[in-house]
Image (tube, rainbow, N blue to C red; front, side, top):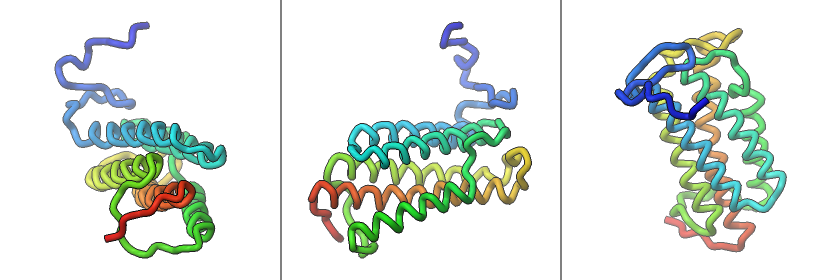
Length: 184
């Protein structure tokens, strides 16, 4: 089977549920942004030496793939964010802050070492995905076996927590590389 089909040459695409929509539709923009986020995490992984952090980043990519699949019209629920995923991110954030010995202390300019700079880019893409999802989440069908409210809440909460995670991840990468941050 060839990778190209030519069916999208006119500016439309099929969703996972078979519906055909314009490629400029917000729904396509959301799952495209989630795909972009997954790719930025892949780039971040090339800069991270800690195997445990890399495993966590891979798990995040898988969960985002499930989120993107939902947005693209599939409601099967594999890898879709759950309360457990959110709690895992929160636990990692808390542990990383404790290891650094310094809690959040104000705004910093994105940058520092390469891993931190990439984590900041990833954070901003997560925020954009969250904003875009917020605009359409009420119009998407729920994940099979979940209420519409729970599906929407888990998707939005996961992206919100994920941006917090990447902020702290950037700070951790700068801390580990002994790179100073520029505070505002």
